[in-house]
Image (cartoon, rainbow, N blue to C red):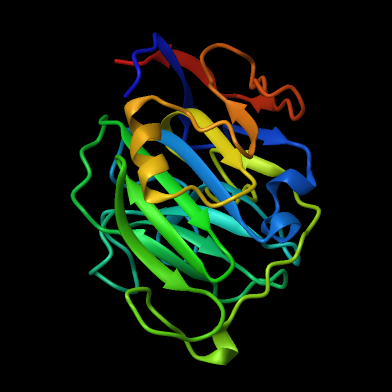
Length: 239
């Protein structure tokens, strides 16, 4: 991880960043998207969760306007004990319901930083951890592996909604407890090699539409177009 002095800390109760809706944040605009962030979960069980015991820590979507989201499960959930601290990236039809997405499930250490990247191309979602590919899923159509496939009644047709982009939550129903920094969005799917170099500190510029470094920059978008507003989160040491 790049050496920086600070990150934005979220209290897990009501802290978040909100950035106004833009077509730059929607898969439907180009048919592709990449979202990257460094996260430091400070607990393994979050205080305000939704459904079976998970939180949405970054995403775009509200009721009837679902688009995409990153999710992290508690150490224990009420529906499936096989999901402790699973980290996922989902895409949805606007009306919501069951989405399709990719995940990794590996031990999480509270207070340790993780680099997470989710990508969407014309057919698949993929997720990366610390620069390494972990999983992919076909959200539309059928075909050979390695990506998981689903029945046509589950397929997703990305459409643009009007919900804001939020960091630390998606729709104010669950909240992240920990720190987040270096949130970046591209209007294309980065390749595996690009994700690896991104993790090492080289940021691909082609298609980069927003960058929230969250180093005491008041949710300033360094690309210059999509500044955000911080609600409650505070600056903390990056240690």
